[in-house]
Amino acid sequence: MLDAGAVTAFANADRVRRERMAALRRMTDEPLVVPTTVVAEVVTGGGPRDARVNRLLQGCELMPLTELLARRAAALRQSARRGSVVDASVVATAEVKGGGVVLTGDLGDFRALTARSPIVSVMSIP
Image 1 (cartoon, rainbow, N blue to C red):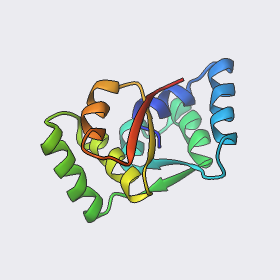
Image 2: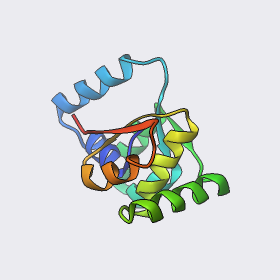
Image 3: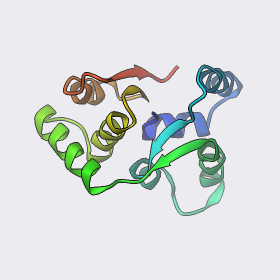
């Protein structure tokens, strides 16, 4: 599961980080998951930056924000008293997918949010 910081970091990555991303993808048969709320946060509507993000997203599974996910994200955020709506939607999406690891550059907010979810953990962007 990628948050906005991870999508941006990997989309604009240097060679070393691109190789790390490729290694992450080889570690599992499952595609990396990106909630559509993250897409809304990272794209600009055009230009070279979006092209890099779009290339990254081609190999990912995009998950829309349903009412169920929105309500779970709200509950997580209320309980943690930290994190943005987008951050909470990433954790809620990970729960719906059966758990997993959120890759992020924002460990503080995600640690608070994932503390309320026993099946989701957080890891700093490699």
